[in-house]
Length: 440
Length: 122
Image: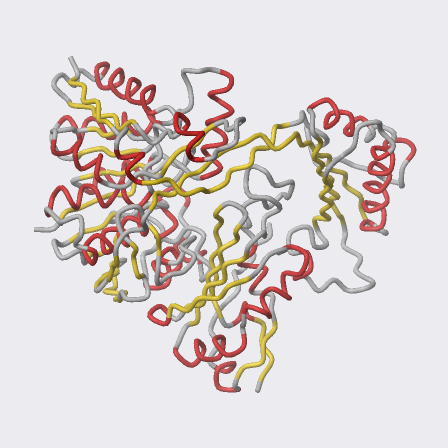
């Protein structure tokens, strides 16, 4: 018997209706993956404003779609929407379930990825805003064994969210490296929602491009770990050898040693077979033992940034934009407190491609957007630079324009550095706990 | 040999981890894979990205899916939440890689089948 798992979310802010399509197609588990490295920084800013935040606030949006299916016993819901405050997220899930009248439903919250209590022995900086370890599948499996219908976690590794229901269903051993690696492959393919089903596809993306019916993926997984990646019928997008291999290698670094808390997966060992009709089979994945340590991520303050943008048109659009940004920089550099870093970009010339773009000597684009961004140690200094823009209006190169409402300078934002560090497994395993609450 | 731009021969996908930009380059058949394996070296990619990539570039091979991977260190201006760049996550780096021109055997160039999107202007 195969287990059907859906990818219900790929990041904080993803679409909701494609998630519903996956539920309607029928899945035993729906997994909503909500956390990127950048997301944790966003959540940290939330939590600095309000201690009760720090989870992804679209949790109720996805959960309310799934609850009717969960209440009918058709599917179970797993998410890492807890971010850096899983307890608060678990509370939100319980409240929502109660509002749905889901009496008897079990909501499990996995706690223990926060390693700030061990800051000293881990050698973390004193000003760490958050420090979390990437947990593996085990606590989620424990939650499922305890009868949970909804599992809310903090920083669990993306693919492990999907490995957990497979271990629970098939009883895979924790040293069955090949099967665990196969589970990681399935999880990795589903964790970015539409990205395996035609999203960000570098081939003929326009052929499956149907904005109102864009699809999220699902997998039919066998007990040996082999699986078919597919999507709900009558949806947009596409699942082909090409779309699947692009997602397979996404952000994995060394594809023969993809590190996960549960296993080291060799994605060069597997075979992708395009079965047609938006079905791609994944088989033969091999694995080796998991890394000795968990991966941790620590966040520290990294100064303040702001930016401004100016638009100039032909003739001499680029020359004017360069002169204008140079003007602002020169005036800012005369300020008392220093700007620590500048970033100049010229959109329409090579703002994104930089040196990869072959810009002709006499290039004369019809318009150029100049963007100047800067970093300073404090908010006040970062804000002061933007004010040097004003004088460009009547006293700069001819024909300054803006790029629509609010397109100029903005309020400074705080920069955050997010750096990886190793965490001893025993230290984390000792503090992980699962709170199971039955909805009344 | 024929000079060809990678955009006509390959697909590409990019992602990030911290300050690392992680690129995948995909060939459409074994001959094309052998050709990019021979010509798109880590050094060439490092050189191609110039000042955008300050650290080392490491190449990995995934012959089962006819792909090369390039892991570029110190490549995002400090990483997503720390970078001043518009493209703080390196989301345009895959396309930037496809700008590279390479010399490949004539039959590989003749077999190139990547297409460009049609444009419909009102």
